[in-house]
Amino acid sequence: MPKFLIWIAALAALIALPHGLSFSQQEILVFLTINVLLVASYRLLTLTGEWSLGHVVIMGVGAYSSALLTKKLGVYVPISMLLGGVIAALIAVLLSFPLFRMKGFYFLIGSFAAGEIIRLLWKRFRDPFGGAKGIKGIDPMPDFSVGFYQFDFFEPTSYYYFAGIIVAVCLWILWRIEKSPVGLTFHAVHWQDKLAQASGVNVRAYRTLAFAIASGFAGISGALLAHYIGTINPNAFDIDLMVYVLTWAIVGGTATFYGPILGCVVLTVINEIVLRELGLEQMRPLIYGAIMILSILFLPNGLESIVQKFTKRRAAEGAPERRPAE
Amino acid sequence: MTDFLEVKDLTMQFGGLTAVDSLSFKVAHGSIHGLIGPNGAGKTTTFNMISGFYKPTEGQVLLRGEDISGLQMHEVARRGVVRTFQHSTLFAELTVLENALVGTHMPFRPNIFAAIIGWDSEDRSGAEARAKEALEFFGLDHVMQERAGDLSHGHQRALGMAVAYASHPDVILLDEPFTGMNPEETRQMMDLMERLKADGITILIVEHDMQAIMGLCDTITCMSFGKFLAEGGPQEIRNHPAVIEAYLGGARHVA
Image 1 (cartoon, chains in turn cyan, orange):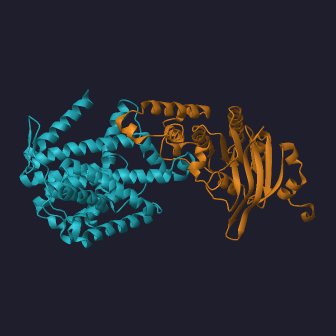
Image 2 (cartoon, rainbow over the protein chains, first blue to last red):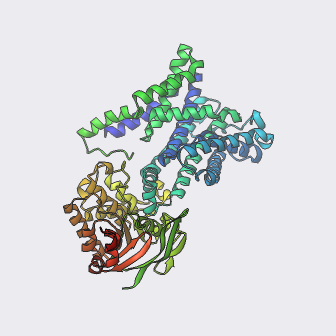
Image 3 (cartoon, rainbow over the protein chains, first blue to last red):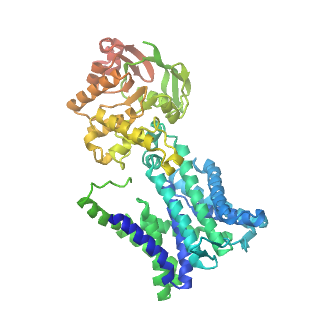
């Protein structure tokens, strides 16, 4: 069972990974783990053919919700994270009423406007959102022990393991959804919404469903972030981060499940290891822009197309290949 | 035969243009009903109103006595009226099998929670069996894993019908199914439609290919400039003076 062994090896590498890194690199690893969930949830939305510019703000909704639930109502932290995701999904359902009157480019701009409105509300209302300064002193995840391992959440390594488990579960759920008949219906809505409708698919409901699920998982990623850094403000969820999410998705490619994750990991590694070593950190937007243009010109199907080349060769030798559904 | 699908005083206006003008006809259960007329007669508009793609300005579409006009397309589909589209409207990027699986959306409604936990294996295998059955019916089982966009034109038309057939419809609305087919393909397609009819499916068909229409239909409704012109069996329509005039022009216009 070589495939099984590959998974075990990958898991062992992920567990061992933080021990070979410096403290600041461990922190970056935590952010990377959270961003993987963010970009993977974004892909679920793109399955139905809609691209949103409000995804990062929705992540912020999860972060604010979870932070406020713990601060004002004293909700236990892991539960508040889950509720943060639920609230983000509910906000998405509300937003879907005006937004899904639009399609394509109009939806893109509409989602941006909706996101900015939410950010302005955070800035405007000092109570409870804390205005432009945001919320400080968010309760951290309480420490606990599972017998063989003591979780101490001032250690990035511990939080990395904790976030890693949550993200892995979320990715598994996202993957199950995508490979299910529901995922197939998302594809159908994307490629021919009229024909899907003639087959009895409630197109509007499926668009809303994809938007709500994607937003829910984005909300969980936001909550993970909030309880790690302990402080959030409206500017942490601005269009800059959204552009990074788009860059990860486009450079990685959105045709496969792993494409955007690959883009996120590769670009973060390039940014944090290579640029930081070279002292070019300040030029991150410039270099990201250049990478995006180069990848559109020379790698239009994203980094995933390189991986596909290798896996296809292997598939051609073995079992008959099953084409990815996009 | 009972009145199954009835179109009553159906009118569609686009701004000042009346595309369909109080059209009425009845489709008997289990029959093949043709809708013909010269270009621009309003056949496709009528189709779009029956299938819920357009909301009629006035009039009703009655299915088993229930008014279905103005419902959304998926709501009409869920009542058993499934349509195909002109040209090859398919999920071109998906495989042939996946296309047919989308067609099974109604009999095997996906459930997201069951899908995550894995409790829907019965539904999934049921949907797959139904999709394969539909593909076999239309002779597409040998291209199941190919991309729908890569199929030949004839196969694409057949797949469009297979997607509709997979949903166990009561009525299939076929919008110009023979366009661009050679005589051999047309003949095969006519056989398949006879078999659909034998299955108890009612077929309403808009078509330009007169040979196919005359050979296939039990009843034909002819319309011209949005208005009802004549109705009857193939023989009647073929010799109907008004129909001949609509297609060929009146005797007085002939120089």
